[in-house]
Image (cartoon, rainbow, N blue to C red; front, side, top):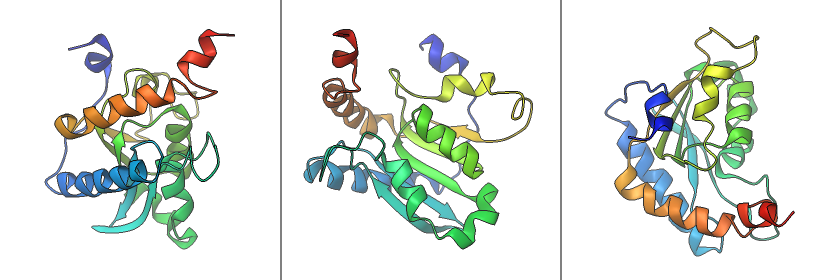
Length: 174
C-alpha cells in the first residue's frame, strides 16, 4: 500500500454504495463516448439520485473547471442545499482539490469514490484543512471502493489529462 493510501482517512462503506458507483461508471463511459474524460459523479439524498454530472472538460469546448463533481453540484436543486450534510457525492475518481473544496464549501457530508487519484486526489489534504474546518467532522471520505472497474478509467483520464494545457506535460514545459 502506498504511503498516500496509508495516510488516507477512510470511513466505512454501506451496501448501497456499489449501486451508486455503478451509475457513476455509466456516466463516465458516456462522457468518454462524447469525447470527454471518463469521469462520472452523482449526488444522493435519502436514497434518491438528485443530480448527475460527467466530465465536460474537453467538449463541447475546453473548460478546465467542468469536472463531473462540479457539474453534479451545479445540477442540484438549490432548495436542497440546507440538507447538504445528508448528501453523498459518488464519483468514479477521487475528487481533485477544486472539487473537494467545492464539496466542502457546499457542506456535502460524504464522498465515495471508485479509484484513487494518486496524481491529483485531494484526500491527502483532509488532515491539513484550514483552522475553520480543522478538528470538525466536515466530510467523510470513502474509497477507493471500486478499483477493479475505476482504475482503468483513472489511467485513461491521467493519460489524456497530462496533455491538457493545465496537465503534467504542459507544466513541465514551463
